[in-house]
Length: 340
Image (cartoon, rainbow, N blue to C red; front, top):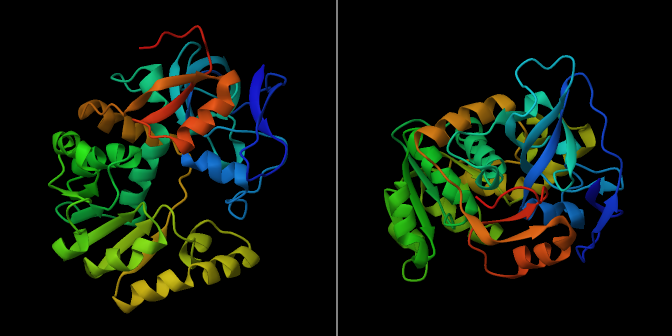
């Protein structure tokens, strides 16, 4: 089968399409014929080795973190799935490989595809959906009725996070591109701030929760709009001591991440705010809960009109990371699939 792999971490985003064996499955796994796989910023971080302290991959490694596909083989211990089931998944962090024609995946990391999503649109849902769900329910432990602010939230993350947050009873504020204002109003945001004409730090105050998608340069501004006792979770800043302890990392990594996140922990603590970092993990049960939200709120993530084949991976990576996209960029792995 064809698979997109790297032989070593590299800054030039060099990948290769290789012919490798279709994987065998363990008793707790299913074999999935991949239909579509989405390209995420995480791919760039993995290729460049930027997250190897969190997860260091044995080379060569097949890339790709989220997918849709069809179950073609079932392990002896798997009870909830049948041949032909359409599924979607954020693959386990230590067993990625969505950019391949087939993938063996733990049944606890998948869910049946939501009824309102196709194999195409579903490929854009699990990673950002689980990121939002875990950020809101685990890291923020957000309470219904309180206020969540997502600066820079008009991208693919916000498109999933906003309806999930609204479903969980939060008041949601987003800052983002003016051209996406009406789209996010339709998704139910309570306030949309056009970043080109308005500074959110001059407008907002007493925010309970912030999900940071912008990084270190925005951190002080984000803290300035929050109330004491609030929580900020970052998708992009440094991991910290809490992250290392939660993931039961080695003493060395705990020490390393404590140092890496010290600046953010200190700044947040000075304002009586709790700082968290998230690196989304696979979780089939959460994905099933997410599926119910996706179905009940009829959430359909945006995918870019430009879809690539596995042989066009270099063009796809360039397009994703160097051009303006309208939704997630997909690889069409199974070329017999329709475009709906």
